[in-house]
Length: 146
Image (tube, rainbow, N blue to C red):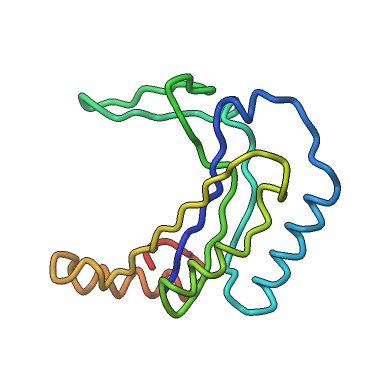
């Protein structure tokens, strides 16, 4: 099963102009290397600040575009990993090893784990021909759909 693990940030944290200590980069690189060597990491990246984000809101038959930052947001995704694991418990164990925030810096960071749905999770509501098409796309390198 696949899980998306997201690391969250707040508007306050993103407003602080600071460059992390090189040790933070070293610790995260070591963690990512462990994920790669174990074979569970499928993808992962840090994201640009929310000030560079764009929200597309759909309603009334149209789309509205709003550029960030988003003052009403309490948290946003700062980075993510996609893990291939055998159980929810294994995903939790990997999440608990994440070296963020740096120990002793007084900050708190949330990681959120969400299982990525597979086409079979949709049961009979998803027509079989669409399930097969999703599987074919994944086999060609397209990652959507499980």
